[in-house]
Picture 1 (cartoon, one colour):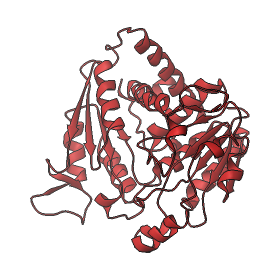
Picture 2 (picture 1 turned 90 degrees about the horizontal axis):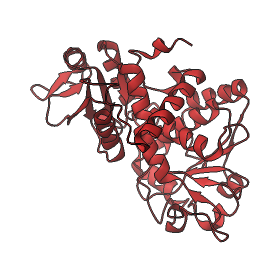
Picture 3 (picture 1 turned 180 degrees about the horizontal axis):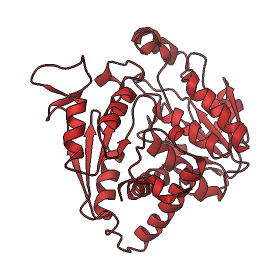
Length: 356
């Protein structure tokens, strides 16, 4: 692998990257994390570089980890609220004097900075599945600087990097690790697929034994599932789907229970534009909660992950997520906050590699 191949590359989905490249990102992230822990300055890496961040959706971890990361690397992150600029829009979606075509925004920002990061899913694209990903890829087409996906309606690659970095830190290996990505109940049906889809892409890419658990009606993108099956064959792991949360948890080393939307919420042809039907599917599976009883089915050295924010009392109990020290009664470890911190380090690694 040529290390200069990172320079200028877009980061939209891990499916565009090789395992070798992802392992390099993890190595760089661990080095930058060590420097951060030692308070060792590394602000020369992106000194005077500019990152433009466009948030169509709200954010806590993503916005602050990118802003802090750019500061620590010596650059600056500009926060752009689409409602306070002329909202970038695709052809046919323009509204006079309130939007600006993506092609124009991308080319202007590319002349002023060094990368463009975008978060967009759900309401801003009217729940047209793939609409946000299309918008981000349109930015990448027109900008001659890297475009970074801070989460769209299909992928959340930076979260996936933080997930697998956390697994690597806790187990020292990916080989033989049983990784369970499970749906969990939430009162809110407006949950994109990006996190679970990127999590299983990353876990199968690293060769883990991956189980995707969900009730019927919560199926993920068939193209993503096919990619995970191919990853498992190529990288020496496994991939299977279960419709039983308790069964999936048995012997798991990593559990990642999180809500995601049911297919009917999307506009046709993918879905039915039917929030009521989606709510009915959700409400019939309120027992899909990560609690102490289910955690005791996992491996004694298991960890709990969540991208946050979690819906406490629905997706997970306090007893599970707040258990940051193992005990005889609670042998699992909540690594959700380690995982959240790792967003900072993996994002710094990618930015250092593609923006240098």
